[in-house]
Image (tube, rainbow, N blue to C red; front, side, top):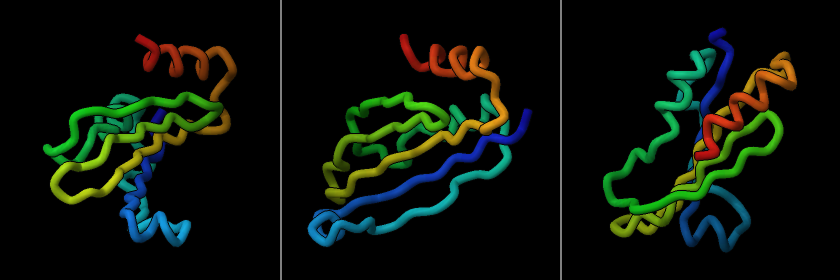
Length: 97
């Protein structure tokens, strides 16, 4: 099933002060689950951690602050709404390790 989307947003100190994001958009559309998971990694080599949140049809990966640029990056795996409850649970379990 190739209906997973991956999006991202980047927050700077300035954009956070205004309640906004610096940048956002799609990384990939209509990809497989395997491809979507691979795209959730940080695009920076200067990040040393992340936290993970599995809620409903979205998996969120919040990367820690990039220590060179000062930016925070989050990536989101959007699970198709047609996913059955049992498959959704299996996908969530992939991230609980």
